[in-house]
Length: 277
Image (cartoon, rainbow, N blue to C red):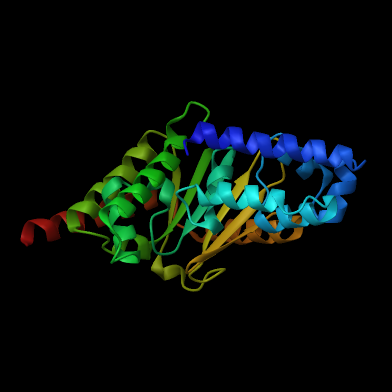
């Protein structure tokens, strides 16, 4: 399903939700209370600004006694995205965010990946997948990254652990292109990058990636990911704790200038390795 068609489908979801809610005589706040979200969230679902997670859709069906229609629509729309179920909603939110902060402990974040780096990551995770499957995932990742080329692109801040620079993904040439791409993005002022050095030692959320997103018309969110799983948080207390952890990482990481030098040094090392093989 094309992005435009998918958005139209979510708009239908929202319009149907509004109709069923009003037929039940419930305000947005009243429905929100019953499904454990705010009334503002219900309004954003109805306007297709935000997409409900599956468990929320299931609770809406239960409260409105709609025989599973919202769960079925949600499952169908999630299934028709090129993303894993646990990440599909995050990918939608990235397109709406005014600010995105990523922490990457081992792999360059998807929004900064080159085509060849992304392909190497997917091949490592899916060694028996078909070429068609891999290329579909790569295209989806590049589509996500296009948000950084838009005139209204979000403020984008990235903290890379030094391990990310030192772990060869794909060939030496792939790593050279990837690090050069990050450098170009920095020089074009499309991203602010800091490197958390090995010398920093232990850090909050050891080994876990973290993504924070802020919006003009909605509360901030935090997202963490494990193996074949992800957790999207929007509960204010938890998000605030995640923001504090990110602030600690930012304070511990190298300065922008020193980080750029580390990225350049790593690229230089890969060039030396590439010419010596």
